[in-house]
Length: 395
Image (cartoon, rainbow, N blue to C red; front, side, top):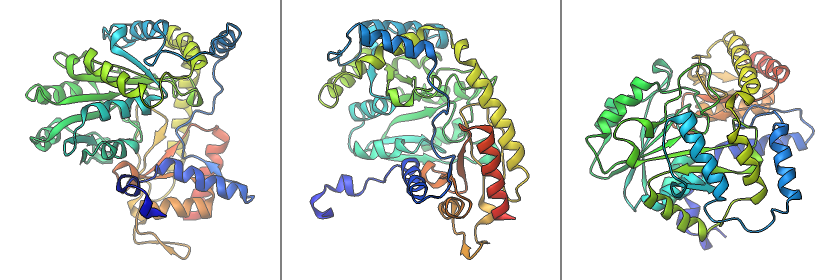
């Protein structure tokens, strides 16, 4: 029945992370013991102080439609968070609360990108960026990097790629899938390029801000000259182990915030009322309250790097943020694993799933075809078992 669907839907790629998770679930349902290292989802429970806030909201009868752009108390709390953590001053009318940071990003792209306009994506990039741009009839323009430069695109690359059609650059730091963090000097260099192009907007996706292992987090809107054309996107899913609560938010110039609110009012309206009340508590408290999770993630990172470094053909770096390892596995291209010849990273990820029973994600989906993404948002025990399975398969 494909002929009844629009070309936009027929041409839209499925989410690679969700597709791999679905394949892993199918194998699990068939009785196979699959270890999932594909999804970017913390394995911690939501902290009790946040859950208790949600329970209080239920008991206080928060059960009506919420304002399209979010409760005023939450928007005020977000403004205080931006000032405290990011040195950015936003007013409540510059904040829009959405059903997850993915919706925040989609709202911005739909509001700003006209058909045929280009959006520069710094590879590796989160899988949904390119699809969201395509849904707006924009053109994703992908700039490549690799493990030799810590998966960071340079300011010169951005400068050389800008054309008269360029409308936006999307920056994601700490980065999904690589975990790399763009430092202050690197972001300043990018800002120096963009100062020469005042009609280009910057979407700064900072969802992994607090999962950071010692590097300074710099918000792009805090850089001189960038505030008036930067949209800062964040949320509570990753740092607070609240993926299913579905709350994201953005800070932007008022006219962009109003446009996003207008769009959201015709699509989903306001985000979940109970989750919003819990988010007020989450972001009002000091980030130190979630340090125990960050410390555990760092220990897992050290563990998985140590284990993967013992597998022939895995090229690794040591990322400063998020909870992913993004090894270059191109050593295996053209080689056989069992009776299967590996042609690309997608083949490698499928073989790892079907033969070693470990779910990862191909780097093709992130604009980096030599790599696979491995999430270490899993227990140390499962990390050890998973890597040993991969090692046994490949040796």
